[in-house]
Image 1 (tube, rainbow, N blue to C red):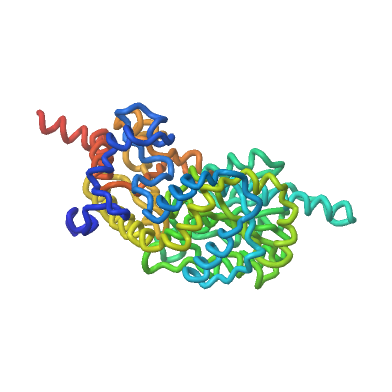
Image 2: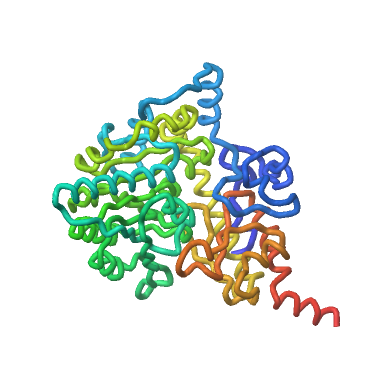
Amino acid sequence: MTEADCSHPSEVDPAGVPFAELAPARLRAERTSLKWTRFPADVLPLFVAEMDFALAPEIRDALIGRIAASDTGYLDGPGPLAPAFAGFASRAWGWEIPHSRVFLATDVATGVVESLRVEGELRRRQEAAGGPAPSGRIVVPTPVYPGFFEMLEELPYEIVEVPLAAAPGDSGLRLDLSAIERAFVAGADAFLLCNPHNPHGLVHREEELAELARLAAEHSVWVVSDEIHAPLTHAGETFTPFAPLAAAAGALAVTTTSASKGWNLAGAKCSVIVAADERSEEALRLLPPETVTRASILGLHAGVAAFTAGEAWLGRAIAQIEANQALLAELVAERLPGVRLTPARAGYLAWLDFRGAGLGDDPYRRILDDARVALNDGAFFGAGGAGHVRLNLACAPDTIREAVTRIAAILPRHAAAEQEGRA
């Protein structure tokens, strides 16, 4: 396969905007999010999970319509977002959701934190009624989205990290169910699942999730499943929602998700918390009223548009992400000796192992300081992340080419070859 073969056949992004209009210099002049303001102008930003792609026209028009109507007040519930998300979940994954089980939150981080606060309140009530004392521990598979660790700082949990395990006969990683079971036996109140898993783009298998649900039910562990990247599951892969499996196993579980990653709506600030069954629904009624009122009405209507009218845009976005991943894989093989790419099966984030590239113990800093490319530092993703970086693929192909060119120029082997050529 040649580099040209890896390129998406279109010269436009999922919204029909020419890639030339997504050049980083142009976006830096037009956009004001932290992706474009955190670093100096000479740094190529490929870190935070924001797309460079233009919004889906359906979402843009929905937002303009709400602004034109001066519809910018407070919310009192999910309203039209509940049937919109339920309809999408049914079409995409065969997950049938009663609308009463859909609750509102500001964003997925808030959904995670508030769901775990509900878990803590349930434990306290059980203890007051003569039940066992809470263990105060939460199990988290790592390396994982570093925001999890920041979220958990708000809560009185001891974090138990369980690294992902190499799958037999497979180059990928999987949930280490044996280690998770040992952690549950030792005492755990909650489990924080990333499904699909960030940063690897790992799509967990149904049988693995079913076993996790069984273990959670057996050991009375509350599971919060962050499924924000699920709409971005790649072609040929099957995403499995955790909630139906939890309900079947009798485990208490909730799902936190939104349209923010699939349709680039992170700043719109609206998400859903979905109860797995009637017991989880009853538990979520303990959520404070502010969980709803702090959500954005603009984000809600953007989410409705995404889930009801944005699937064609989403399909084009996934196709472009897959093409960009193929391009990156070829460029890494050709130009970044010693670097290993974990192929993602969902999402637009690439996980790169730089431990064999000769950039020392902190490749993130070398790449930022010397190549002027901003990535995410794997050291913040928990056990197993050191020596890795995460790269954002939701951009124009030329942006990826430029990033690899800059990084290749600082690799020791490249420098040695240049010096030899000059001699």
